[in-house]
Length: 200
Ligand code: GRF
Image (cartoon, rainbow, N blue to C red; front, side, top):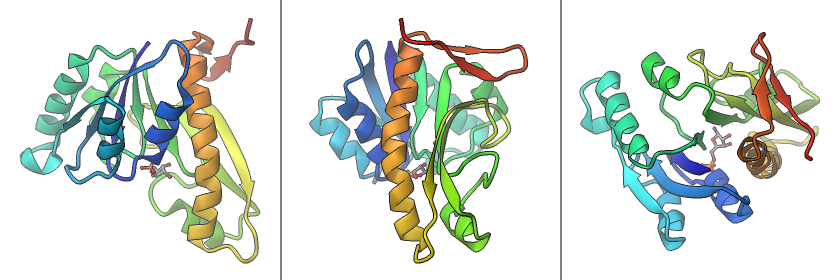
């Protein structure tokens, strides 16, 4: 299966996915909307094709989405992986990759969609927090949940210490979810819930 990974910055989730060397999965390209995304260097150093589709160069979201889809499709991916990709995508774009585009979000969805999740979890006094890998649907941070990981929130936590604890789990569950997809073990119920079949 061919993967195209979309990033906007550091790219540590992308790095974890590349390092996982998932059997049957090839990272065909890494695409960033920011020319200065640190993750691009790692991809290049690992012989992975990289591209930049700079959202600032497009007059409308639609124009950006169209070019992004064109560049993604060039690599004929089976799965599009959003890994710290910080642009909201339009409905047409999302529909185009329905059932074959995943995202990772740093909270236990449906709690805390959107930004500043660690800060908000601490502010609410949550005792547990975590990360979610989900299929992307037009509603932001609301697609069918594939896998989650929970971590404790400790009394002395700052958003930074909590983010680091969550990030370690992200690096574990994102390759896991992709592995399930590549193994053909993920299906959707009529209600739109994810079922993961046992490994054979
Ligand atoms: C991750 O915490 C991801 O869940 C969030 O942004 C961060 C991206 O980190 N949406 P990286 O670019 O994968 O290092």
